[in-house]
Picture (tube, rainbow, N blue to C red):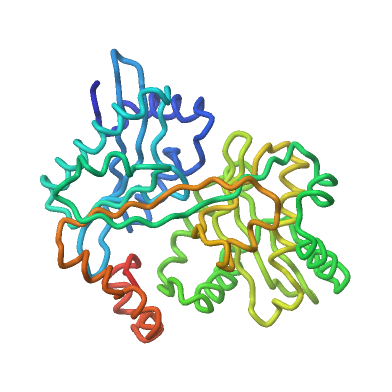
Length: 353
């Protein structure tokens, strides 16, 4: 087996493999890599696995800096990052992957690895020099070929159906035209602020790149909910082959009583089904049946697909800081709201807070 880092000379091999693989998403494409590279918050480290000239698998990774822990390597995907031609080769391929990544950590003196796979636990014994932290996530995959009438009647939870009906009754409507990037950013930023998420205003540049570099209706789609001629919510999904993958959903808190989120997801389902897409991936959420995002997404009737995040720390101190609750404490104290924008831009958007 031969492992090569992606370069322009093997772009064709990468694109050909990804386009034929049934589990590939837009996040595996070179288009997405080029967006993130131009955005400059990460640097791609894409690996191809060859055997006698044939591509056996691909793995998209990125170098990132995470304050205050330093530089690391992450799969940075909304799905299982590793694509393999033959599932029977998964064990051998993963052993080669881990060996390559361990050598990369030593070469670049990295602080951590963060990998999102369906399962790595059986292979952790091959990483004895790391302190390992695992989180369980899942996504929901909805089969749109069942038809929207069937989905609404038999798949959607009663509370979700009622929420959609209420939104329509109160006069909420959907705009299918691509909004100005500033409009979507306004909705997104308010949502992130409400959920204590990323507040770095430089992130609008990522949205501008998506709007300018990708084709609307071919690479991505957005829907906007309108109430009294004002945008109150938006949803964005990336498109690849017969699958759509929700990337972000945003809404204004003062209009949540209108159920714009349930209405947006339902209108997205209708739009995708009408255009002939087969699947809608609702995006990652913690595997916790009492958590709000999990409950919301589960009520659309999709099939649950579990996966895990594995964080491998090279330093016991960094590992103990995380395990000791620094993430919980930072969120509890709402540190992000207290950090000036100029500082956030200086340290980069990938902070632990």
